[in-house]
Length: 206
Image 1 (cartoon, rainbow, N blue to C red):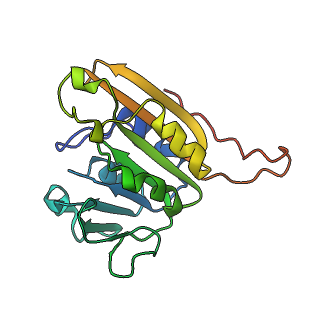
Image 2: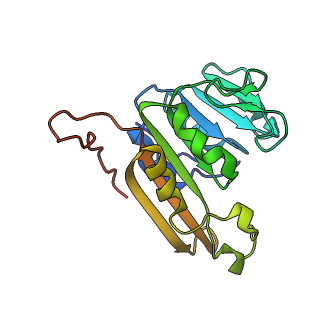
């Protein structure tokens, strides 16, 4: 059971991630991409998942170094050196996988988007939450390079064959005023009795 009230001085876990975290297979490996202080790596590790935390600056998760079930990788996800997503970059930083869950929050680098679903195991869950167009009215980030376009995460799911469990986009007031987009999607499992539709996934309570 994911402790939804889990709190760490480096930041409280996203309510979106905490809500849909139970969709990740029990004990399955989780990738926290651009992890920052590791709030979601900590959330899943506390629930018994092996976690891989990746960031350009791993000092935010230095206290997790050496703990059983924790892998910390330093990687410039936007740099010239290749990042190995799925074994296609022989000289790159190997992110491992496949994963039962991938978490990305408050981060956008568009070249990575279409490559993430390939790191999911069948039934694996992508939990994504970041800023969207309109956020420039509230402050940073304000560059279009870091703001999702309307429905962009839905398009990612459609184009990569992911099964959408939940999607939101719009303006929020807490923890501060912002415009966000959120996706919970699954690499689908076949349901032989549903005429080609994937196996439905449970909807956790909000």
